[in-house]
Length: 181
Image (cartoon, rainbow, N blue to C red):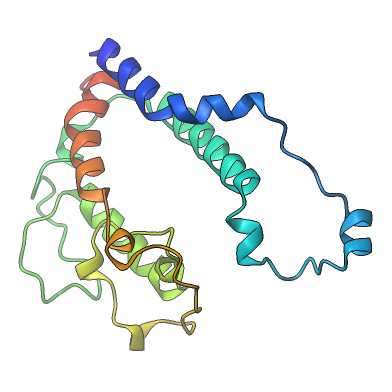
């Protein structure tokens, strides 16, 4: 299983590693002042530049690998990942209308996503919740939505791999990283 995980990481991150050979230019505050760039605003053009995308991918790769290394230090408590494994766990607040058994992990994720949704995390085109159907309505959000330019094709913006990622994490990656306990 460890070999499978290693190959999975290589496949997922092989394109990201090739970016490391390129230097990412740093823009100092003096240069930004001379160029008339206001530090309070980030322009879409800046975020979508190849340098910005490269830096983001490298940062995400390192974050994922570090989190997996940290997770591998602890044993896996299988009851946390089983549907209805913790019988006292009700539906999270705001999700009472759904009548389905949840694992403790799903319960925790739904609660976290509800909080993040209220602070408009999932209005960004880069962010996709695991349980979108359980997010609070727009009326219950604390902050108004931000407007983002439509850069991707309408169908491409709907692509969400989170259900596949969650299933693979619980069924393949977690058992290969941790032992029962």
